[in-house]
Length: 116
Image (cartoon, rainbow, N blue to C red; front, side, top):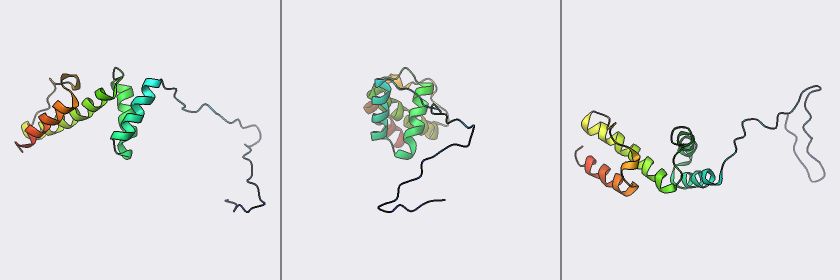
């Protein structure tokens, strides 16, 4: 039940049931300064609804990524991958985000889109 606060009222303190313990360490991950910088960059460049998924993907599948430029290249390479599949009906498994810079991947996507 929600209690409406007035000028003179104070909110109720949460008290767990008798015998219950409050777990204060639930799913809290620690992050390095590099990870925090990458997360901030991702939040600035991605739509909010995708930022969390991108962060999780990078931390789980690409732990070698340490620079924002690498994040940009990865995201553009993923776009390239999808457009390449649309154009050629095959996934370009022989490519890697490390092969080009983000700008080069954008140019490659633009070239592929001309073939659609």
